[in-house]
Length: 324
Image 1: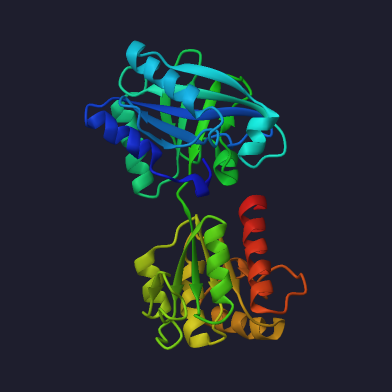
Image 2: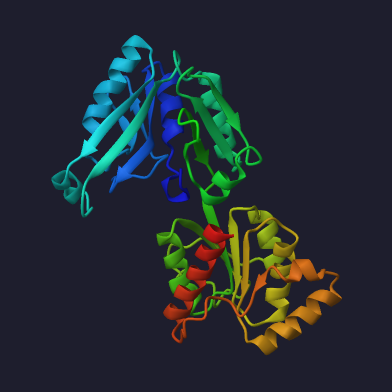
């Protein structure tokens, strides 16, 4: 499951089961061609026909719901094969059709409620967790990132080489912290949200970090190190500093370099960064930590305007996330 698909789908299935309505969980386990939804996408179906999520953008949802209700009656999991025609694909915004396979598991008889509860709890705690299913014996278990490091790193659900073991990846949603409520931050926060991040803006200068300049954004006017400590930094977090003010940027950078955040980028010229490196060394940080900083921030695409600089930053963050 990709970060942008982190809807409350397993949570909905668990709620419906607890309420006595019955529930099944449908998961895209394989795709060919221009499938409408990626592997790992999920749809929860209640015994009363309510749904949450999507496995095909509307192409085969009706058929999946029918099969899910039958699975609730007989208690057996199943894997369904669907072909998506060119006409159906075009209706959901694709150029051509494809095929998808969908695994349907009724909660209770097939998917144990306590296993689903542990999956939901891990997601609530922002812990990366994998759901592994042997689709021959129908054994199930939860695993951590150490079991399938490449899948977790790439956010890639799918079958193992034995073609029967499916691994569904549930990484926490991506987050981006932007330190500095400057002009670049305005398009950057919007782009981050479009890319599937939960953005968070930090700047103790209330004249800059105002609701009027950043309507609807999550904003902290605490000092950056305090704000980041309260917000939390984990391996699914990117941090960008934009203030040009060492009093604001440096405490944030030190916090990030002592965390598992996967990206830290800092605005400023090569000369400005050299001075920053000296200050960070004086603060006790080692070379390996300092080398994690991307500076000057962003890919070199010749960006000039705030929006173009924001594009370069998002591109570099995406490159770091997907290519390591």
